[in-house]
Amino acid sequence: MSFRQSRFWILLFVWVSFSVPAPVTAAEKPENKRPNILLITADNLGYGDLGCYGNPVMKTPMLDQLASEGVRLTDFYTASPTCTVSRATLLTGRYPQRIGLNHQLSADENYGDGLRKSEVLIPEYLKQQGYRTACFGKWNVGFSPGSRPTERGFDEFFGFAAGNIDYYHHYYAGRHDLWRGLKEVFVEGYSTDLFADAACQYISAESDQPFFIYLPFNAPHFPSQRNKQPGQGNEWQAPDLAFEKYGYDPQTKNPQERYRAVVTALDSAIGRVLKQLDTSGLRDQTIVIWYSDNGAFMLKERGLEVASNKPLRDGGVTLWEGGIRVPAIIRYPGHLKAGTVNQSPLISLDILPTLITLAGGPLPAERILDGQDMLPALAAQTAPEPRTFFFQYRNFSAVRRGKYKLVRIKPNQPFMLFDLEQDLSETTDLAERNPKVLNQLQQAYADWEREVAENEERRRKSDNGR
Image 1 (cartoon, rainbow, N blue to C red):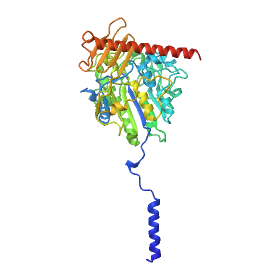
Image 2: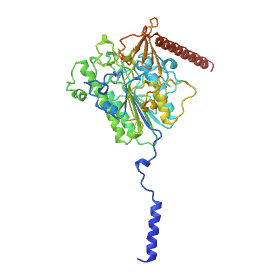
Image 3: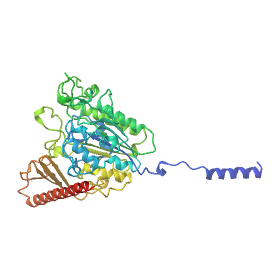
Image 4: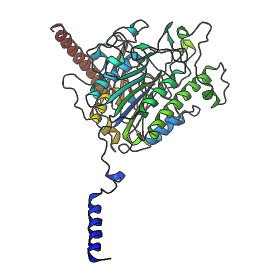
């Protein structure tokens, strides 16, 4: 080879070496600053209904695995012990007293305004940050024109308006209740699977935008005879495969066995959604938040109370721990240490500010939010500063601060005081033994009631002046 030829090939090699970019390694890839968000709620699932929360019989391998991959919360509260209010407070990040909705919507009210239209919901905040948004499942906060999911920030909706539906026929109080967007649709299938499948399809769709999926299942809400077809029994419903996982006959009449099958069917559906994240290569770019909207109901006269809130006292519609302390799991790969258990008191009101912060948006300056970003508490190695949570539903009132819990079951009765570190089941009233703490928490509750009432009065005056 001549000198001129050698020089040519050397120059060509150098040019190619500097012109062709080297392969980008995984470590060099830019981080996704705005994670995908998958927010899943169960419906009336008990604190003691999962294997990872100590249930020795219930088969919940997918949620147990999620806990091993994320953070399991021991002291997570829902802002209300009933479905409508718990969902309204989740979506707004505000106490029921601020949003004017502190009761369970009736059959007719489900198709009315429900949550007032001036409230701003999670999807509305996230759309401002470039998110595509979808809701698949139970709405239950109002379904009149202007109140429906696709009119309140969601790009897509497939689900039902009311508080619960028959799992197969999709009826509520004698009315068919299944919608896609603003259109009533008739689709065959088990509701848990239908909503999971819709979420899987949404995840699999290619897009340059991050997604926010709100996946509020109606399982394992108890059955109601008013939702059944003529001649249909009032029983928990689940696919045959869920019964077979226990070795149960799908025709069993045992309500405990049937309830377990409903929970296991829910677990399997959630597992499919999580697998879709893996299949789509989105696992590491997605935060998953799962919790139960409120505690399992313990209304014994119905004969359907086969769920477990153990070791907590009582259940839904009360402010005992069984009504408001709920199972919760959060997975955020690369940000939260897998397989950890976190005892920080947190509340569903924290979810909205957490998601806005993750999305890179500003917290609203024009309205009060009652939660805070919970990621620092989840990632902290030390206990955060004690927070104070307030609750009021029907005749119940309660305050949680640090290890202490204040509870009153009627407005004309005295408050009781419990040490939740020593007495998680709320059996021993310490009010007389610890009057200082009692008085401090009573004053905090009175101050909170006054502050909320004053702000609500200012809001009304402002609205009337427009």
